[in-house]
Image (tube, rainbow, N blue to C red):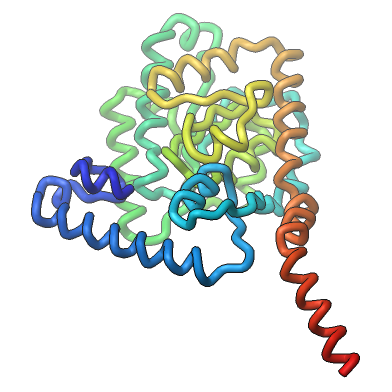
Length: 294
């Protein structure tokens, strides 16, 4: 993020108006550097145990704090409810699950779907004519609601609106229905620290195409359990690759994805958390015994 500000690259976390201004970019860069220095000082001097949620965060914190943290993957508590979903009988749906925030980059999903329908027009018209994109997510405020309307307009401009559905503020029951019936999961956020939606989709038995960065790349999506992509063309290619799998191949990958998702269960989190805290907990126990003996 600091380098993005320094290079004056506009992005989700660096407004174009700031990137276009040399003075504002310089001021923001100095602020970020000062904040990073303070953050680094606190981390080096005031922590006994440091836990991070992914390899990406591990590298970031280690660079700032100068000491290696412990990776403790976050628990996906709802995944147990998804384990009973059938691995077969899936509908031709590519499902995206995320809030309608700028950094989630749902526009890339629309662009990838448009590339899929045009680059592979024959297959997507004949063999996979019923394949649809469902963009499911929640809105926090009026800005998010406006973003949904913009995405709908962009879908029309791309000529794909008839094959794209937006499901806004779905209930948990509706989310589960989509996870149970969709065949492919799509994730497009760049450098997401972890990416728990991928875990949910894998636990549900979906074939995932996740962003080739951050947590999904380093920790979550293994080659036997899903695919990674960066550009619209790459996403389109990977979606077609998954669509073309035979029923047996698809079920084998779905099963591998579900098995892989167990690394992020509540039980695994509990064991990793207690192991990371063992040095501190041991000291607390020792102190309590000392107090009792006195």
